[in-house]
Image (cartoon, rainbow, N blue to C red; front, top):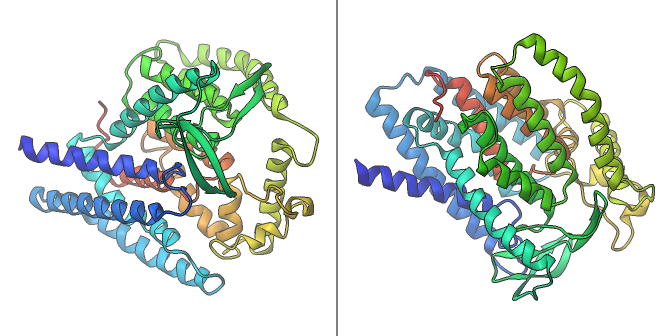
Length: 414
């Protein structure tokens, strides 16, 4: 039994680590390599193993599979139909097809995990904590001027060389002025950009606070994650930290009556508005090529593309439908024609139908589990302002939300 538990734990950690590697890490995006194929094959292998273990446990324990089987059948029919309709417009890459069917395999894994207390999401948090610790050490060293010791060539927007330390930390985006501080090096960890690192850290933070922490305040783990988010200088990440603190007060504090909570919340709202406005304004630049202007244009371009085919969208990965609605100056040589909002890309690609893929479990969780609903709601905010449609981790969290909804037992808390 101990050997079996250890084996499952190792496979789960492998599942988590490979999923993080796929989140646009330097390894995954390294130019001139087959790392993307290697990560995809390894992820599929580990996922199938966990899926097989979960189904074996269901059979042994005579678990009531009626709801799960109904979900699997409906999911298979709906997603296959949607993929075929989308394919009739634009060819769909293999990676995108894999992502569409992730819940089919990962939902059973999470249902088994919820009842076995193996806690895959806790392992995810543990791995991210290690990454945060390593990155903070090297971020401090880079801030005091320690010379880099390694480099990598990545294909991200364009092929470029980035420098780092011992192949475990990279300075992928240089330095910026942030919140009144000048020359702050952006902590990108092992990732090709700070927003993606901030996204991974933020997911680990909400998992730690809302799913596994019983502390009245904040644990050292949570504080470490918050500090690391600040070093990424990601506006979305910092606003999320504020949102997390607000949500913790509103949903998890039991010592304060609802009436007092209402008064406190009403008093805090103007302060929160001032802080968030300051953070946004600190990054706002009226120039068309600034980060803030391009983000605004992303929402406009995504909306214009969605408006043309609002039910079924323009076809998965049909980026041309978005490009043709961007500010024409962004399409010049070496201009920024990347996209930054996951929600608008989803709506542009697959319309309302594809949007329901992500929104449905979040809405349904409102009456099922308050804590998981908060996690789902905050993760949806991240999805709106960060382009995570091409990373497995977002689909894994969607699978977790469905698993909580379909599980016959109450969610176990550690």
